Image 1 (cartoon, rainbow, N blue to C red):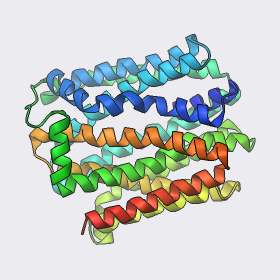
Image 2 (cartoon, rainbow, N blue to C red):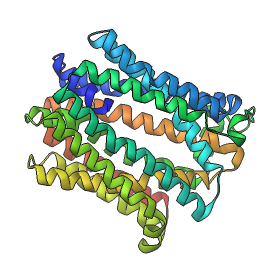
Image 3 (cartoon, helix red, strand yellow):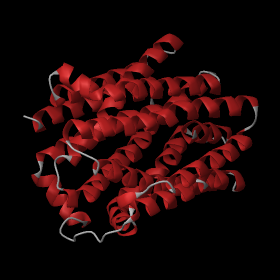
Image 4 (tube, rainbow, N blue to C red):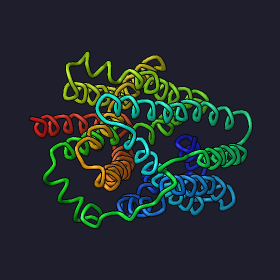
Length: 362
């Protein structure tokens, strides 16, 4: 919901494209620095408690934006959101990664990612309708109310999620993760895959509302496009193990998903026709729908159980790095040239990621 509300609210404030890029990058600043230390905190506190704390913090950003008008509220809200979301993501992925291996792990991560897409499907539709028919202020109130559901659901986590353990110093910290990244080709492939995919997705989600808003397209239609992207991802994720078998293995599946992302992103800026925009949304949804859970599986199976939490945090740090970079870079390019050039450049960067990944997976 915030992926639509924040850029549209920034446009109402008269923000430039570069300023919008800064605002949209704000949630990824602190996680870029703190993701690995957060993994240590989650290990000590237990994933249940971490999920609850992250969910409580997620209630705050919409209220801050509402109660602190202007750019200050946007930046503060975005910073809090980044920390809250990072804690919940690391905790959630740690819970799933402990449930199995091989095909079983592929299935669990695909369903986990499917549920994430369910929220990404409903959120844009709801927020677009609220903005068009109610008001921006009421939309922010509804966002906080919905976030409370996450707090309540975290109480139902049981078993090992209630237990905290101190992380082994040899597996935690930046030095340990740097060594792991340098020596483990599975980790390298997972990081490159998630970085390329999240660059495409971050650029698309950040600037599509601004781009379509400049074309005088309604918030409801923008929400429908982003929901279609999420629907495409949600539909394909339960079939991820079948798709991997059909494609002849994980390697070809990885390359295919990145190809779909690159093409969908590049073509988005070429057309303003709503049908073609829907097609691009489907391509990006399919590509992101498989690439993200597959990168989680690849990483989880490339490390030991003791290394897993910190390694997942390193993956998330890579995600946040490109999510920070994508809006800034594409915002500068769009302001200096055009949205078309920015989207095409984004697609080219993903194609470069495909080339690097092919070399890494030889």
